[in-house]
Amino acid sequence: MCGATAGGVSLEGVDVAKESVIQGIVTRARADGNSEPVGNAYVRLLDRTGEFTAEVPTSVTGHFRFFAAPGEWTLRTLAPKAEAVEKKVIAQRGVVAEVAVAI
Amino acid sequence: MSRETTLVTADWVEQHLDDPSVVLIEVDEDTTAYDKGHIKGALKLDWTTDLQDQVRRDAVNREQFAALLSERGVKNDDTVVLYGGNNNWFAAYAYWYFKLYGHQDVRLLDGGRKKWELDSRELTEDVPTREATTYTALEQDKSIRAFRDEVVAAIGVKNLIDVRSPDEYAGRLLAPAHLPQEQAQRAGHIPTAGNVPWSKAANDDGTFKSDEDLKQLYTEAGVDWDKETIAYCRIGERSSHTWFVLHELLEDTSTKNYDGSWTEYGSLIGVPIVLGDEAGVA
Image 1: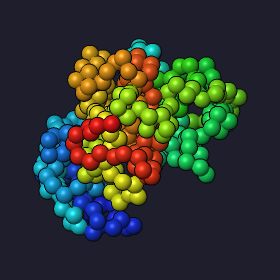
Image 2 (image 1 turned 90 degrees about the horizontal axis):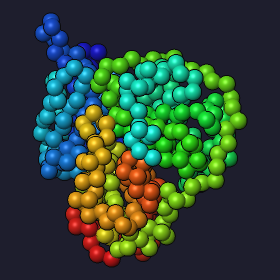
Image 3 (image 1 turned 120 degrees about the vertical axis):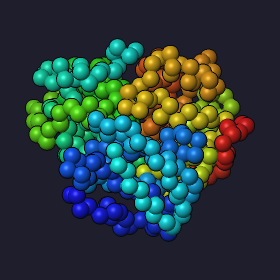
């Protein structure tokens, strides 16, 4: 699981050229210094005003994905026994923006 | 209705896990979520196959709903507790169905699956078996369901609440941002509809805000409590969440859910649409 690659679940059937994809993986640091994917986190997408736009649970491999519109967004990640983490991301049409979230 | 008779806490559910008169039912947008773990004893309802007619675009009818609950082993006098992902969107949608067909005692688990998971409470993969029953559904309660003609006639007359995200309301997005955006219908919102995203009614952990905060939220958004209210979203599930808040928690019994929502309205020929952040005029 620790070797999970960026990208996660397949985009097969989705016309990526028409979408502004934001996706990534949520990981948690382990005591041994390595990190592991978090499969029970919730990632929410906030718009440029901070308003909630969408939320997804992470997959067992820690992955999440949004189909946003072009512009600046914020990802806010909630997970059991962790503080919420916020990260800003720019979405562009036809581009898959990859975001790594460490909790 | 009120918070005491329509909502239960996670602690309440844990105390009633072995109570034979309580039936837990999970309903998710991601219909595979249940299979990866659910609350002990919970049944699953699949909103795409169990709650929607499989030929025409409509809710299952009275006979289909009765057959569904009979087959799943739900009795008319059971206390049904619904929960699910997406901050209970689809659980609220199912709740609205149970009320549409006259079930007496139905409740939502406050916070749904997310709160349960964030609390690190136990999930199981064991699927319960229940003996079939003979469930009786009543005629649809049309006082909680709005259809398109009523919605068009409500422009500038009733409170219309668009509960989608601001970018969907303005027409910058066509669907919630966890779904692909390419859609057949036009973007925008119904003229005069205020935008009160469903999420404003919920805390981060998915639980509902206090009655005082909720009342203030809709009042500040311009809801006239002397008028009837219709809530809509894209397919009627997020607006079920807001319908629950207005009709069940705040006891505004004039509130209806427009389950045709934007996928219907945005596909109608000739109806008015407003683009941008302003509500627009009738």
